[in-house]
Length: 123
Length: 123
DNA sequence: GTCTTGTTTCGACATCTATCGATACAGCGA
DNA sequence: TCGCTGTATCGATAGATGTCGAAACAAGAC
Image (cartoon, rainbow over all chains, first blue to last red; front, top):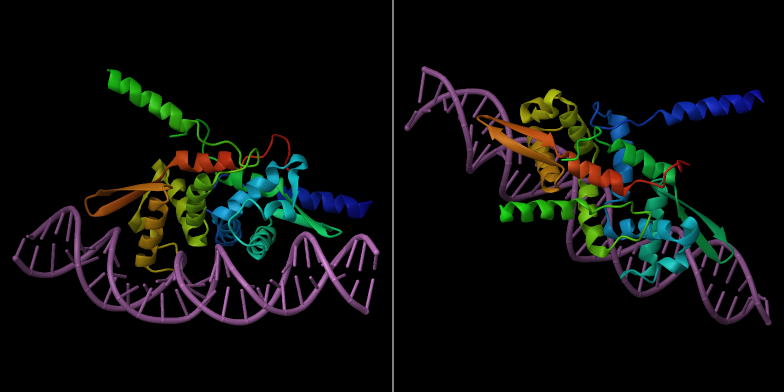
């Protein structure tokens, strides 16, 4: 019971990690972590993969569904999926022959919150 | 008068550009454009530069304020600022000897909206 | 165990990128 | 115009990255 309580407190601490980057200067360590995630999003194929995965009914897609819509080879798709996974933007699970991928909403929400601008200032 | 009205309508059209990428699959052209912006954000120094610029009183900073806080040379700072500017994330203006940079909130807002996840789903 | 399908990893390669010091350019005051 | 400060560009370099086909690995059916 006491171990469970400690874990919950730990999660609370971790949740207080991101405010808009325009509010106060980013630290070096935070910038390194965030740059990794943005780098994962900096390729058109990977952006489209992420979007396609998330758009699927049920919010997940099998790799076999992902190799057709792109003009790159299957190993390249695998490579891109690995980059997304290692950046913490998606997770995956093997179910028999097939491997399924899904987007991690918390990671996107973190980046979205980071890029928030002060309310009402849209240009 | 009629020309002004057309321009206003044009701006209204441009504002209706971004919905969350998790909602429906991104197209190829949109992905290429967006990847460029994410690529600009994929370097730790550039992230910190963007954040520092936006955090300044008045929302803008002179290059002379930006060369000190980083462990890279002045030409490297210039190069990074150029990348940010060409990605449409910042704009700049020379005022005599000094060059000032400021963040373009609409660009950040566009990316933030793109990364929005369905309300209430944070993990 | 063999064969098949699906997926990941490997190695090579062309291209891209962050960084540097040197240099060119921009602006100002005397 | 000259000398100075501030900034952008240039050319070179080492390291990173997207892509491919081949090979290795994972799982299922017979």
